[in-house]
Length: 407
Image (cartoon, rainbow, N blue to C red; front, side, top):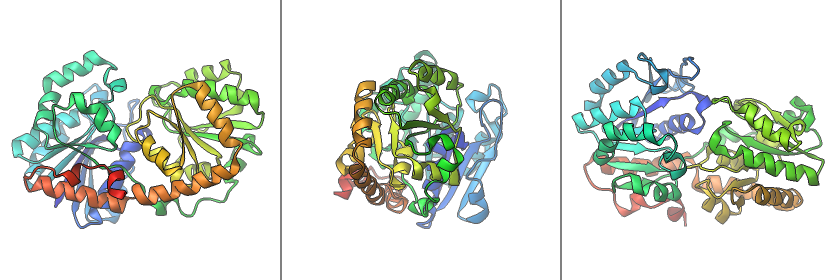
């Protein structure tokens, strides 16, 4: 099959979607399909990029990344007339179109030309239909929905959810379109071997001989960093040997606010901001940390969570991270409400039981192998694509979630 993915940006600073799109394409190309990715060169703050997955085109003849310029202001809308023209020219020869993210020009153009050329359209909401996110900027979003997005949903062949919770939360907003649950994944080989233990702590001496709590992700309003600051304040009041590492890009200029929260709790001096970590630096942080923490208010999947698990790092996440059921069932970590007192109490109990931490880390690795590995996920996606390309409806096996299939 010839499969086309469309995504607004592949800049790594925007978190998991770019990583997932590239690796999803590789998993399908590994099964013999021809993959293309259409994206823009948007990178925020007036900057432009060549996407981080562009080298795929250099080393694999079955994957091509096309980067089109954003050519109509404001940049935030990602309007690219060259991308629209390319979609119109390319789609007649495409079997399936998979569109990542809503509320962008790339989504409008892809949906419009998919309808014109009668190509099956799959929409992946990326958590934007979680009520917590859906209600933000409601007036602006309502305008987009009224102008084109609602029509797109009504014409879509299917909606791709990455967790069962995401499907349930999105149900009121998708006009009863058929959906399927296929999670995201990792290539475990990318997390083997890990850097020598201690390399991260050597780079950041303030973490030596400390119990390191690692937050890995964007500094973003939905991530619960205010909750984390309060929880860490309570933990530090009980233990002097703890240190918090916040590793991620500050796309929205929220770092001063996070620093103010930490200062109010008296723990700013016990916190290190590393900025965005990639490659060996990220793996070193995952290997040296004692506990991964994510008290998000909304998280449709959480690639950073399974990165921690793949590295053998136990995780503590909120019950708003939509893969929390899988984590809890596997015993790969703990789940708590988005509440500072609950998070603080759980952090202390986890740090005090090193044997249990080791066991949870080992279960995390096994869980990634079982549920979140790209070869198996690629097979699931291939089945969905074949059904939709043939014009058939999704069957019950297509719509079941990954945990059910693994039982």
